[in-house]
Length: 68
Ligand SMILES: [Zn+2]
Image (cartoon, rainbow, N blue to C red; front, side, top):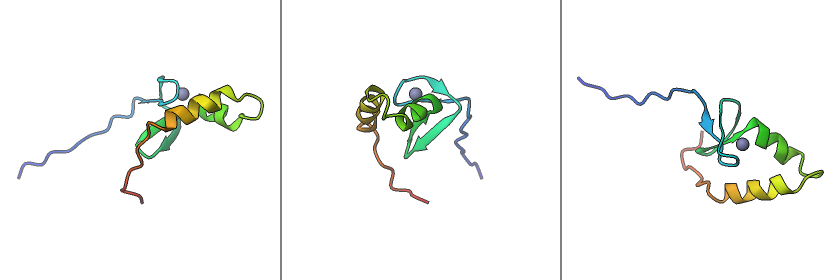
């Protein structure tokens, strides 16, 4: 029987925040936030601009229903 598989090659993922393709970062639902942006979000107290940008980017994230 023929079986079709989807293979995810992890060469990196596109960050929803800065559009960079990176291997290190955080996955939220089906979206990806790179390590650089993640650190920027954590550091919101000293710099609010990346946070605003992050919130804008998050609006494009559609929550996935297949939660583990
Ligand atoms: Zn990023």
